[in-house]
Image 1 (tube, rainbow, N blue to C red):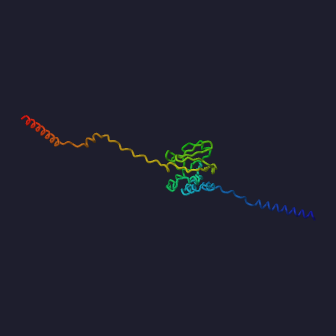
Image 2 (image 1 turned 90 degrees about the vertical axis):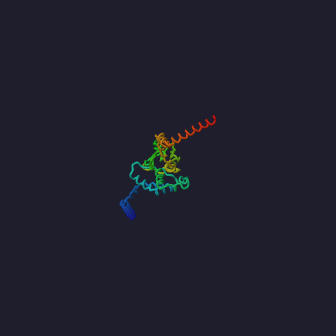
Image 3 (image 1 turned 180 degrees about the horizontal axis):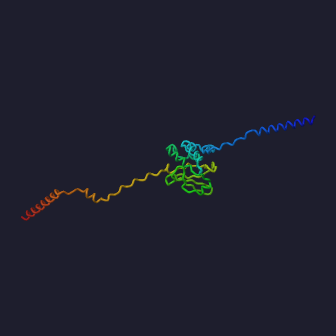
Length: 243
C-alpha cells in the first residue's frame, strides 16, 4: 500500500513537471525593445540641469534638425551643452535681446557636425567649424586646446572647459560645459568697413583757373584811364611848385 502511494505521488509529480515545461516552452519570448533614433533632448532631460538649453533646442527647431541628421548622417554629432548655471551667469536680458535668427545661430554654435571623442580633441584643427557656419575671424570661430586631461574651449569672448561627458555612443557625443559659448558674430560684431574715399581730381589746376574771375577789356580800359589821370595830376603839381 505504501509503495503504491509513493508510486502515485511520483507519477503526479512527473506529470506536473512535464505540464509546466510544456507551458513555458509555448510562452512567446519577449521581443527586444525597438532601437529608436537618438534623441538629444531626452538625453539632456535624463541628465538634469539643462532645462534652458533644452528649451532653446526646441524653440529654435534645432532639436528636430539634430534628430534628422543623426538618422541620415554617417559623420555623427558633437554637442557642447551649457548647464542652467551657465545661462544664469549671462547678463540679464541677454537671450531676450537676440533675434530668432541669432538664437538659432547661438544653439548651432554649440554643435559640431562630427563625432569627436575626448582623445580627438588633441588632434583637431582650429578654428573648428560648427553648425553656425563661417569659422573665419570675427564670425563663428571655435578653438579647442588640451592640457593634460583638460579640454579648453575659446570663442574670442568665452573661455571655458569641458567639465564632463554626458553621453557617447560612437555617433553622438554630448559634453557638459559651464559657460555659454558666445560667438563674436552675435555678441561683438565688427562695424561695417568704411566707404572708400572719393578719387582726387587730376585737373585741379585747370579747375582753379576756370573758377577764377575773367578780366574783361572794359576793366583794362578803366585801369589805363585812372593811370593817365594820375600822371597829369603829378605834372600839374610840379609846375605849380616851380612858379
